[in-house]
Every structure is written in structure tokens, then in C-alpha cells.
Length: 212
Image (tube, rainbow, N blue to C red):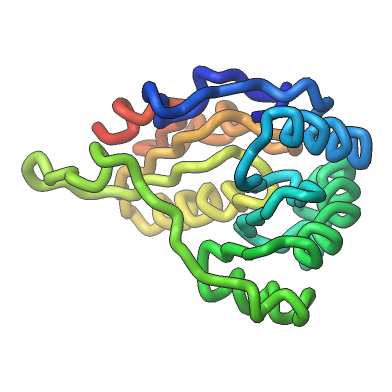
């Protein structure tokens, strides 16, 4: 994992998983990719798997998972440094990857549109859930809407608030809970939910609290 993260953030740690923090500077472009490459080769890795930034390591079979291509299709929804890093990294990553994993058919269609030569090496595999979220059982009758995600432009939390205001004007008090850390952008979510009865912002919560 990169220097922007800490080992404690890795959800599935075990005796079979060794967590190492890269010394590569986050979103540094070519220097970041070069540093990660040196580290992976020094660790004598059998396979390299990247998520973001997308990249491959020369001499090591590499797998790239693609969540979406919105930095290319909707650059206005991302910070400029993310758009630059993504744009510079994605084309060589998909060109050199042994396999590409798209998390949905929609993402696979985006890969086909923007990088048609990579589609023959692309498979679709949905994002998994931890066991305690897979086995949830309702605790009595529940109602309401739950949004989970970072509060930033590409998640369009403003649309949720607009819908909440519309519902309240119609007399609908359906509970709405927004969970996620405050990201970049101009939306002050804490201030925005004030005056909207039944709309709650919980900030970031851990997986156990999220399950509840």
C-alpha cells in the first residue's frame, strides 16, 4: 500500500498477509510508479496487482483492477491531480497488464470504449463484501435510505440532499442517513443537513458500525 495509507486500513489481515507500506509518494506520477516498481522487484513478488494508480511492473505479471474511468469520461468530478495521474498511468497500465479486472459490465463497456485493445484481456468480477456484511439479517422492520461513500462531487451527495428537500416539501419524512468521510469539494455536508428533519450525517464509521 502507498505512503498515503497505513497498514491498519487493510481490512483482511492475517498470518498469511504481510503488509508493507511503499515509500512511493502518493499521486506523484512517474516517480511514484518507478518507486513502486523498484520495491516490487526487490520483494521478488510473483504477481503485482494495482488498483490506483493503475500500473504494471516490468518483469512481474501484473493485474489491474478498474473501478471506473470517470477521470477520463467526467474529469470535472475529480481533483486535477487525480485526473493527471490517472490519465498518464491508465494507458500504459492496460497495455501492459496480463489481465484487467472490471468491477461491473458498465466498467467493462468503458474499457471497451476507451481502450479496445485491452478488452480481450478483461474479465468482470464484482467487488466482494466482508463476511459480517454478507450474513446480515434484518432486526425487525426497518425503513429509510442509507448512502455510504466519501462526500465529494463524483458521489453526487448534493442530489441526495435535493431529493430530501423535495420529499420534505411533500410531507415525506423517510429517514435518510449519509455515511462517509468529508472529501474535497465545496459541499459542507454538516451544515447542509441542518434543517432537514430525518436526514443524518454520521461521518466515517468502521465496518462493524456500518453493519449495524
